[in-house]
Image (cartoon, rainbow, N blue to C red; front, side):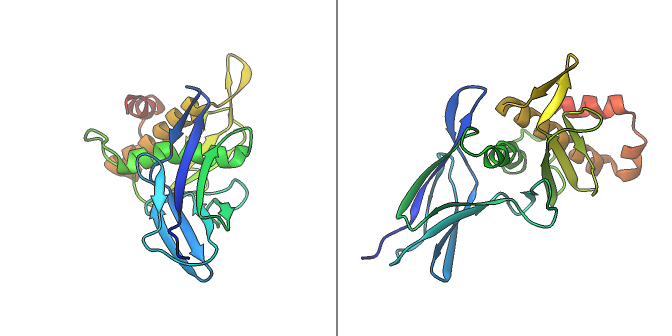
Length: 211
């Protein structure tokens, strides 16, 4: 019989200890050679636009039209994940204890999606085509960085130093650092490359902290 593929994606927030919906994630639903795509809504639900027969493979790429998340050691691909094969519906919760890499991708996707697509109360959006790269630790012991190897790349580090000891990010730290680094991108686009390069670090950080 025909059936309609769909499901729900959620995220385990280890700061609030709550499971929250994942909004805006593009889910690919492939029946044999035909692929459909639908983004999750504010409650984390997605559904195929039509009914079909046969098995379905569910997968995602951690990206939207204006940003993407890329794996640490591969700059030429977008981070992706096969959620489930051959099921009529899926209910996936991204948990750090089950797959830390995918949990980190989800941790980065949430603030990036909010900054680009949600109501930011008039704050300028970041420049488009941003690459967001998760890293383990920075040589300078920072929490994140803007303009890494490429002008439109931001890096978010899993570990940072606080009070002379290494601290691992939780959900709130990933959210705050990602917003902060995207704000640097907004600032650079707003004032231009030359002005941004000659702006003092204290002004740059004050601008991003304000955002």
